[in-house]
Image (tube, rainbow, N blue to C red; front, side, top):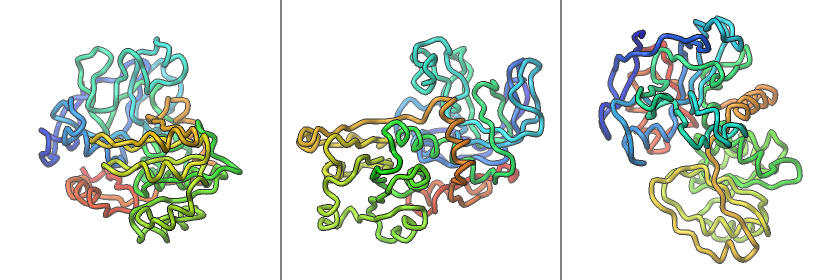
Length: 347
């Protein structure tokens, strides 16, 4: 075992504090990554505060990880020492179930080992995330990052990027399609960028009028203020797809009516509270309400390659490790454009 340093939540709703813990020594198929940057995802806050239940403490959050490979196991061949690698929301799965076989490791039917707040495949060893100076991971669950890209702007792609890329691809975003993005935050701004890069006509649906200039800058063709009944009415029945990125309680029914016949609204923001859904907007127009969870390893690599080719990167504000608690509070107030990223060299 080797010693690692990071920031951890000692219990629910407690400030994160410096934490020293053990990482396993790299095995034959493992790589060790010296972490340079880790994004702060809204799900980090949900889990550190045990808002979804089942949290295990102490918890080292972080699943938007980028860093430099410092060790390669003797049977590992995907990476070389010195290369840049990324780690997203998964560090292992059973590899034998139907979903793993289909490249849907995030839906592993036996035991998905999430990057933090989970356990390794032995079901006992806790997983600790990227708010730390290093991580050891099987090379099959590490991602290649194109050389020359700014690591701080790549890091959020490992969750926010794949969380929005996967449903956009699954439901056919592209030329000739109109895509709505509900919420313009960490997830939403990536959904706008990726959908626009795919060739779709993007409409941002937001409760904040101040975000209209950003929506245009990020690639949106239109902006609708969700409190503006007249604007919503003009958009009724126009959208092929809506990606709902909002992670708090909100009204979905007014947005369902914006879909075309057989259009789809896909939920990617995980609200801790149940949402009330009226059936008539679904029945009338045979509309669909769906969900999507990150993506498999191959699809995540595909997303990274797409973003490198299309020059799609996250808009970030880099913070020192000691500022993580302040970043949490600012994120909850919507005071970030659009993703906080921790510089782990400041540990």
